[in-house]
Image (cartoon, rainbow over all chains, first blue to last red; front, side, top):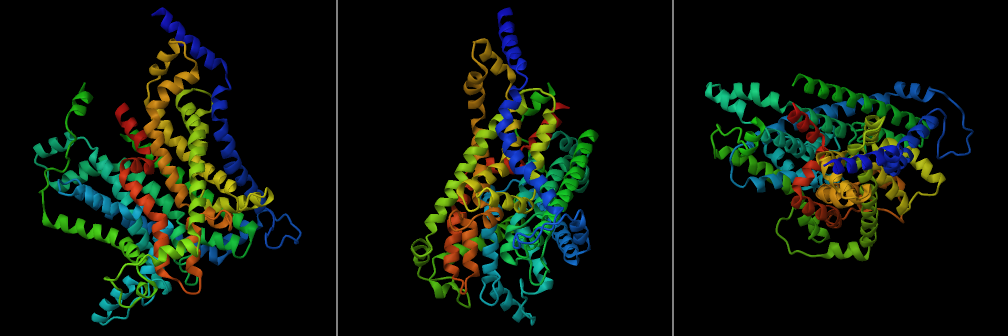
Length: 309
Length: 296
């Protein structure tokens, strides 16, 4: 016994004596992340303080301080992009949450073919985002797309004009939100379903013995117990919806006009269409600040939840 | 004591008090399933049509299948080249990020040292960066070091992009393995590395596999970086397929076939490893919370 303790002690001491050892093990990861995370970040701060355009390398590079940020905040297109992003994120996440919760509640029943239903419902989420974009562009193609055609027939029967899903500036954003809901409701469902399935039976047994109503049980037991899962689902979906790029870029590229131009798309246009490199960098940093602020808020809420529990 | 009793009981069916086998439940689930599957099924059908039926009005449901589109993709568009690019880049990025990340995850789980939590958090913040925000400085850096349109450039980028995920996912699993197991090996005179290789690594192999699968899928699907950083040499599948659409006449049967090229391998794969996929998505956050709940 004494020998055992000595052996462990020896090894432990040997490892702890080498103070740099943990850092040595982590060094490859840290090097990669410094090169690809920290360095670009610092570089972006530098670029944003000048007036660089990669399409005009012959122009003298002038130090402009914070002018790029100031111009950006005054830019109507930036404000529009911010508005579009917020509408897109809030509306999509809100509907996804309630739909996902509904489906997850249905899955708590004992039903036949549960596995088959689950696999089918997961399909949209598993598809490559670019493929989702292309697919819906095909389905919603004016006149000939399958969805456009059948909706057109239906509209004719009802005496309405056929909607132009992606060409109508008013409808385009709603169409994109619909596609995002189609694609990501399964994600909400998965997390909420996992949360529901792992709830302990005791509170339910007690409530049922007291003869509580279904609605009362749902409101006072199911939802409070589900809170951590809800927070995680909302956090991850909000962050992902906020930076949706692939599907929007493939489907509308921000158009028609700038009716579906989210921050990400606007940033891409600034950087790679107009080649305002410095302004794009400034904008990237502002987006980063927004995302960090958002995640801090969420983490704070999550922590508070844990304390209360 | 109470916890052991709970674990022994069968998994609770929590809403069992609700009526079973309601027809409307099946109706809703069937409708949802069809709505989820039908769009992609339509694309698959289209891929087997010829040029004219692919774009007919009204849509054709019954037709003679042809593989014309797949043949054109290989012979005329040289899709196999881009498929190979995608494979090389996503496999290399997966091996690299999982290989490097495993050690970092192990370190963060096992050793106590000053600044450990700060490092862990900093690693996580790297995941918050929206890809588009990184692209502009990255584009300029790659331009200076001549890494634009190379396989290596994209591999490095994807490795960096996936590392935070790998570290956070694996850290939770390493924390679950009792330290005593490794210490037992130390007693037998094994070095630190031998104990890690013989005891700990085999225990986390399933978790590493799951993480690798997930990283592989994310790299395979990635579009934004690939769009701006690659060119004819190193283009992966997603940006390649999107370029088909901007041509003068879009041939939807070819586009459908290309979509199958990208999506079907992943689709089949994920449906087999569903369980891991869910875990990957929540990135071990659920685990942390559950652990907190158990600790109380």
